Every structure is written in C-alpha cells, then in structure tokens.
Figure 1 (tube, rainbow, N blue to C red):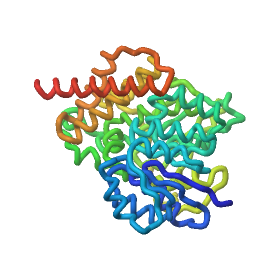
Figure 2: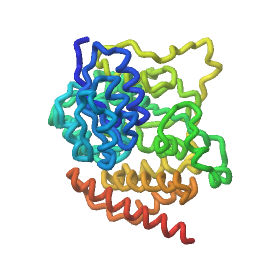
Figure 3: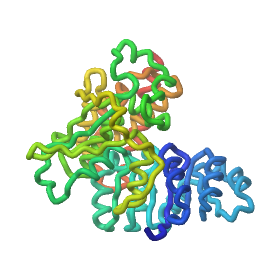
Figure 4: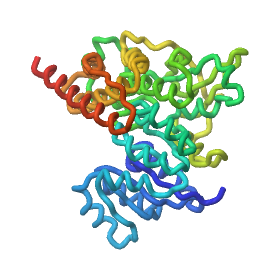
Length: 388
C-alpha cells in the first residue's frame, strides 16, 4: 500500500486510542496530519509525539496552554477550540477517522465529507442526527464511507452489492450489555460503576451506558438504515452474548453471510484503514476449538424499551432521531453524575421525544438547533424528576 495521510478526530477516546495503536505498528504506511481530542491533553501530546503528527488540537480552549507546554519544541502545531477541530477535519487528508463521541462530531464529520476523500465513521450520532443530510452530501461529494462500528463493518463486508435485491434481512447482533439477564427491580438500583463494566468490550463511559440500556443498538438500527438503505422492518436485532458474530446478512435463497472475529475494535479499524485492501492487525485470532457455544436470542423490549423508542423515532423522521439522541446524551450524563437512576435514562428520553415539536430539519444548522432545544428540554425534565 502507498503512504496515506490521515487525521484522527477524537484520538484520545476509546476508538481513537485503538486507531493510534494500529497506526503505530505501521509507521511507513501513514503520515499523520492532525489529531484532535478534548480535555485529556497529556494523552493527546503523547500520541502526537508517537505518531509525529503535524497538528494537535484540543477542543477545550482552557487546555491550550497545557498542551502547548507539553509539546514545546516537538515541532507540532497547536490549536484549540471547536472551530479548530472543524478546521483540522477540513484539512486535506486521504483518510479520516471520525470518532468524536456524540453530536459534537457532526460538524467536523461534515467537513470531512466535503473533501471527497475517505471517511472512516465511528461516530454513529452523525447519522442518527442527520442521516438524510449526511448521506446526500456523501453522494454529492463522492466521499468514500467505511463504517467502523463492529456491527456495521460486518454488514459492510458481508452485503454483496450485486445481490442487494436478494437481501432478506439484516441481522444486527448485540451483546446485551451487563444486565441482559437482570430484572427491572435490579436495574432500578444500578450504579454508574456497574453500567460501565461491559462484559466483552472496553469502551468509554457514555457508549458503555448506551450498551447497558441497549440505546446503543437503537442508534445502530437508525444508522444501519441510513448506511445500507434498508427499512427498519428488514433489520432484526439478536442478543449474542459472546460477541463473536458481529452481524450478518441473510439472503432470500436461505444463505446467511456472517462476519466473525474476536471482540476487538482494532479489527474493523484495520479494515477501514486498508480499505479496499487488507492489512495485518494485532488482534487475537479466533480459535474455533475454544468456543464452547454461540447463543442468540431476541431482546426483551419491556426491559430494554430503547429499541422500541429508536424504531418509533426513525419512523417519525430525522428531527425525532436528533431529539432522541440529544436527550439521551444529557440523560446519560445525569446518570453518570448520579442525578438520576439507570431506568430514568430512557424514561427521560421518551418524555422529551413525546413532548417535542417535530418540525422537519433539512440543514445542519436546523439539526443543531433541534439538538440544542432537546438538551434544554432534557435538563428541565431531569430537574423536575429530581424535585419529586
């Protein structure tokens, strides 16, 4: 493979760190133009030195001086602020990883799309909030989109484009999180520490909580509809606790093409980095002789109503999914700060969606306005819940 210039948006997060780990093992293949992070500037500086990045950007302006001191004399350009993150995304890199968590990744991701190069998308909220707008822009700018979520990467690899009309169903697997066998009485008392302790994957706090509520899978249903162009009725969620089958595509002749591997995000990251080729990755190889069983079941939507809510919002349109995502981000933050209970997360989101005025959104600015209003409504709903 020839050398690629790359940018990592969100390099200090879970996906970003795994991307750095893959890249550092192949120093001759990649030239790092920019790394962006938020408040963990010590790690950002360490990554910038390790990968010889041209630019390091912190989204937090109050961290600029600290980052500048850490990288003094290292030959790395230092920038700070949301505008600087968007500017880094707009720089001409062959390949960009979008892994900023939450709706904050929307504007930088759109800057990547406008360049018409390769976008490795790990920020699912971009498509949840503005899927119609983003996918149209990807087509207009002829951007190559490679999904990085393990499930969507699996579908991307097993969906035969020439047989798209023969697809019978998309099988979207879910680990079920740490509470898949717990009752509502248990989940009512769940602590943040319990919720972030995912049994299979090492992820950030927000994504781990989303996995525990299964909101993560709800977001992935929405994302899959935008990515692959199939309606929600063709997407079937299966709880698969072993996280070996990452997703599958079923065809009308009865064939099912499944993507399998160890639960390690470096596998889909390596696939995205080398696409359309393949490269070596440091992930553990799947040993079939050590697999005791692979089990699958349907999710319990009574205990995990986020799945139903996500599907309902998808049917209502882009504004509803943007509102749902914004309310969820606020509610998860409130739970992690011990302001509300675990089950209150989805209750809050549902309350905000039910009371929202769902005016159609057709621009990124309108999506951001809907997002901002939903966050205000969610905070208000949480304050009212706390007062009870």
